[in-house]
Image (cartoon, rainbow, N blue to C red; front, side, top):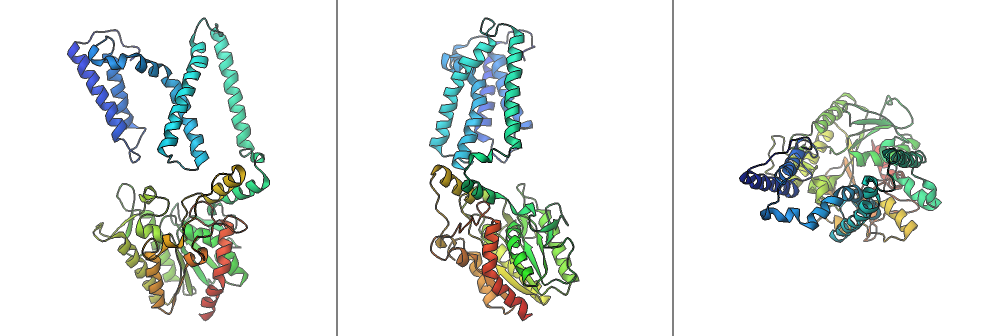
Length: 459
């Protein structure tokens, strides 16, 4: 637009351009959401709106004098500085509160602070740089100062990155808490390979090849994988060999299909579960199947972290219908899968739902120790009662009670011996808000191992 020749629009077209331009910007402001691919082609809508307003604004029109008023013009003058400053201020606020969703007062405070900083930045940095009579009168001086400033920033960024974020700024105690953020897929104590999908993992412990004879197989999602980092070493110490077959975000169910954000089937779950079924049909040496997953979140479509985290956890019947409730789909699908295992003369150990927290455990514990930040409240037994998030665990427990070859192991009873659930002993038991840390996996394994060994010995 800067290269367009000067021209005069008829007054009617000026009004039309301005109205349409404002409507396009307003539409983008209030109707674009996180499910849309933005930026991208959708960015044409607000950009076209801005272009239309600028094209129509070459002549003053009292009917649109608000856009040319001094407050609006001033916001326009500082808008680039405001744009540059608002993001780091929001980013540091989210780091400070350890939450991407800031409260309205905090978000409003960030807007005000970034506005004031933008005024100072515009006044003392942007204007002097652009002023031909300012302190940097020669263009070469502007380039030299710019290059030196950018070089200093890049050097500082590289130094911080290469030093792993300057961990020395924390005390050894705080650094130890933060070390528990390491996630299970680092394969620190498991040997894994991707198959049959890019997200599937087949893992062993202590060897890179699957044992000729297996005593157990652990299934299914990332919760099972995090538990396996403690459970597989504990079982191997007692002479039992097994493998882990895992894929994030899927449950061991027969019938229901997980849907993606766009409403289509999540094919990776189907492919992975078919691989599991094929393996079980081929091998007759696996007496015990250990099932663990994010049971409550899949069944209820919500956990303590809020509804926004359940948008990816939508299931339908195999024919695509959603007339039956998701809870019934997951419950019946889990039981159908377990019946198929029993038909193959396999024993089953169901490990129930791990209570989720509404906060990142090692990070918040470190913040509490480093800065005295308030420690959020952990989950409670009541959150996972049979009337709330514990409905699916209650159904799985009832199924185990009715079948001699099925056992149910409650992580609610294990992690919530009192009313408040445990989040740390000597170390944080969670790696984030809802996966076991390595320490947590060992903690749970030590308390499950006797029952699991008893079930294996009975075979």
